[in-house]
Length: 426
Image 1: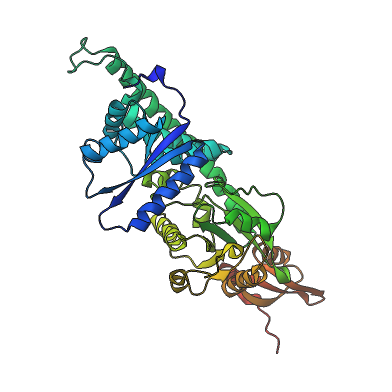
Image 2 (image 1 turned 90 degrees about the horizontal axis):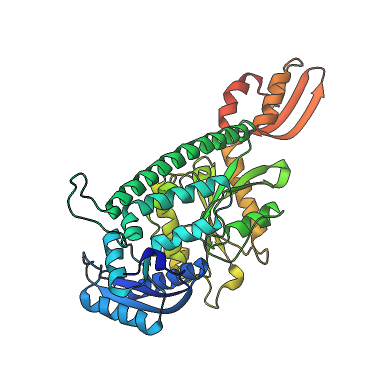
């Protein structure tokens, strides 16, 4: 096996995907293609791909011996620096592969972690990535110390240098994990305070969710205007971005863009990025953006819904949007996608097609969730007038000797406090 201090940065890769029993060949090929996109985003050159049919994973190498030899020979012929597996490998499987190939061996999860690390920009995202990487590396520490001597047994004074270093390293990593978790708790408290301030203003909120590269950031930019980072790459957005979107008749909404999802996203990553997705937990409704031009659109949409279910927000009202109408082929939107989401709105953030209809649909959701009412407030109840301004959307306001008459759209929780001042014109 290559010693840790002899390793060179990997620049090229061979990708290995698996066609499992009970899954279609098309699905297996699509996942391998997606891994290629991830690896390219990571910055590596893909020299080749191999798809292995597998009945059940093997303990030592995940594949059988014959297939392992086939992968090793292909990596040798291509002179690939690294072999990247689409399925998760255990720490021992990674070590075994590195021993027989003399090459760097990683899996999809490590690729995603690397991309997240490169893309994180805010303090919160940096901490979240660091935590996920630490938790991922903890059971794999032996990979970094295979060049050190280790002795069997644990009698005091007989342990080798490697074993001692591993114990020290493990304690260091555990301390760092604990510190990162504490720092994240502080940041989440700060985010909670900011959210409460927004909620006291009574502005409705929507969370943008969807598969990575579906066009969520492009949609937010099209609706809100201004400078929002948009790039045609996987995981272009890691940090939640909230913008105010103005609608008709004085309505407005806070819209938050969140990290995109991928198939086979490891559960640990979902947990690590839970606070990144936390804004969607407190949204009034969700806007699910789907890349309708992708051949895998239905699988990608289903993946998004599964992740939403994992973090406990699948019961919110969801407005589905088919994006990238301008990239659709002649046959149009896939029939199975339309069947699954018959009420979806078709748009193109590139051309602007369907955007006005989408705004109308958003306005309808807001109005249905917030009733319009008129209130006649006594001249001395400035506090109630201020409360309506904070919690609702003002439609009209008139001042007279009788008091202040305000027509507004307010949330349900505000109705009780204002019930005695309701004004119903004959």
